[in-house]
Length: 300
Image (spheres, rainbow, N blue to C red):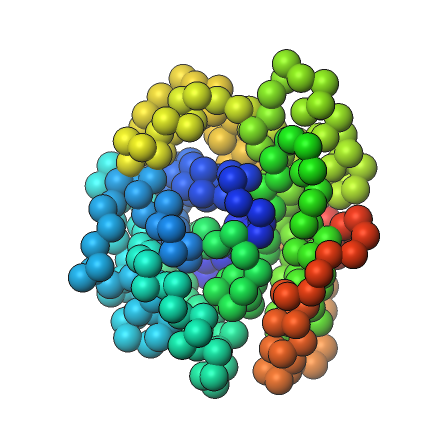
């Protein structure tokens, strides 16, 4: 059964798509069947993997509305035979409005994944830069959350709101949801500020922060415009080295987390579907105070 990881941060421009695409590509290169779900209406993951935006093609919008199955939506990536993509389109902008009055609206993505989850070792959901219903669907469907954090000023801004949303989802909709890790991105080793930000984030999140730090790298920034993961664009770049390192660390974390969960008793009591309102209210709550580390089994 494939592990589902939501790549989440409601702040834009922190490296969610870059991390989703390149971590998934690294695992696919290691011949591990991997799926990327582009759940952002901007369709950045779709373009970064070399697919044009085609409104006539099936997309995650169709999956959320029950119009297509996972197998029907998944597209094979030409140069990476072990990687597939469920693309996004601008139609996804209207999905939150269309689903708001629907039954089990928080479980639409989870239901879609149940039809083909066993065919993949890893499933990554590239979430939009918001904490709305689409992101809530991702958190309900996911086994864990990966949080990219930019190594720049105000890096922790907004994370308290995200951690509050994760706690709400854990309490009412997905008790098994864990924090896969916090990843520092866009790190500039030439500045003291970047080093101070990394240290600050490590003080707040502790061992939840990955040892791997993704540098600010020109080749890494250029790769999406060519529709290629960094490994197909410039495998010798520092960006490629960083994501290969992250892939190894990610696999180690996941293996240890699975082992720890196997030793623990199953969560008691079913998740109440009626708790969705609480989680959605948590998603819209304003920030208050510094973020606190999210609770999860220690992956390290």
